[in-house]
Length: 239
Image (tube, rainbow, N blue to C red; front, top):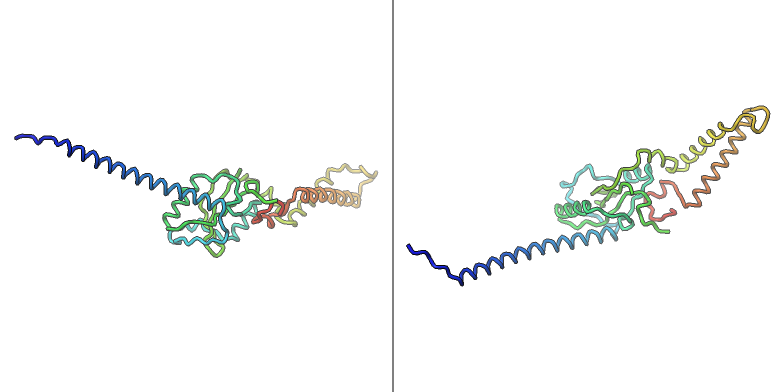
């Protein structure tokens, strides 16, 4: 049996076909990469200039209910730990690639373009008008927000206790009263008179209270500080 001869023209045609298939694959890969690049750029644009009035229409059956928070819950946490809850456009830190990937996954799963990003973070991580643990949220309607991603380091274990005096004026007053009492106890007996008495103790205590309160008030006004309840959702440095 004679072997079929090789037709060079046919072989050349096959190489052209293979080249066309390879080019088609390259075109498809390029198209996919270009779409992903455009999607990434759109997400970053939304993060840097998102609107707060946006409502994202998610498929609630696909959402993790443990990541849905009401505005009142967010407010409570921000006040307790002296954090701010602001639009992502004010965030001056770097948004990690993992957060972008999660946004893309959500958009693909729900068939929507996510907008209206907001972030919980300490004041120093925002560009406020005049690095710790940011959390990225998006609104889902009726003052509910969905947590997309958390990154960075956890807060100091004593942050809540350290920020307790700044929660409201009552807490700050109690701290000043307690500090004044401790300082008064450190004053040696008989420093201002030969015999100690309750009247002398309370006079010194009143003097210490006025002194410490004056320093606290001056510090607050000089640095534009305010209580946690006033700054948790304010975009101003000296709110």
